[in-house]
Image 1 (cartoon, rainbow, N blue to C red):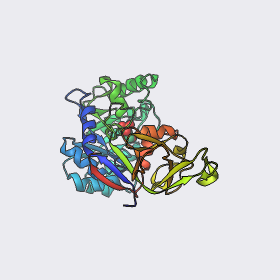
Image 2: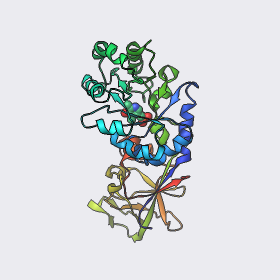
Image 3: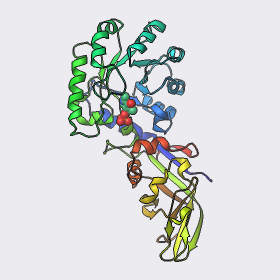
Image 4: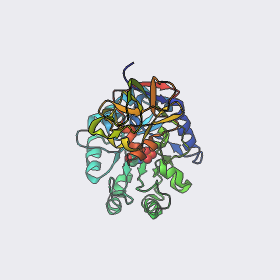
Length: 347
Ligand SMILES: *Cc1c(COP(=O)(O)O)cnc(C)c1O
């Protein structure tokens, strides 16, 4: 087996979804965000597992992302689209029976003219200034929009992963002011917002990263294990270098394992500085630069030559790997490449 294997634990994803759902009151509906192919882990597999576990509402970024979802989970679950109703989306929204989160007056006009009977939601901008209607636009449009019967009013928090940020309470107050008393289900919180407490939960929560084992859900079960085969080992004498740019020089006799994954697989070059690979429980430092398809690892301290080294595992989460590259777990997860053999089951 030449390629690395990405083990994806669907039971852990379901357990994380249940754990996040348990943080809200019983009446709150916990949806699942499966955009970007479920953060790179396979939207079809993930959505099927969550649907079987009782999840009935899903969010994607674009209508195209809903096509495989409909095939795997059927017609019943509600699939909401964050990007709303863009030009060219009409047929897909109608054929796949999607619920666009309308973001602007332009999108509303398009939707009400093209698909007057198709359910929709509204995304409101409570301060992030990325998507959604501004408070003044909402004030002007609200009566007309309410007459069309929106299924959901939503907004998104900019700093939910920083519990002490004053932005959270400000956005909450703005959202309440825009939506209070309208009698329409509301949604404000992704993973971070769920952890901010029940004031932030409203009727529907929308976790993504927490399902997949990432921060800010620190209590999440580990979901992925990335196991990379050793292609070759060699003994390097003191003074010899390893890899591009001579970035590693052996100070003493060193045993190097070359493993079969690289930056083309989402293991970005920046992890080279401080990430490690694991032989079971034993950490082994990376030696030199990450190449496109290969990584060199110092295994001098191991008694036996391993067949595989793990780059993601219980001991090194996506957030640990991200920290070594000065990025976030979201970026590591969504970058994991198409070359891996994917195994679904227990990680
Ligand atoms: C991606 C996204 C989510 C999920 O966020 P997580 O931080 O991954 O839980 C929820 N809502 C919106 C609008 C998003 O774009």
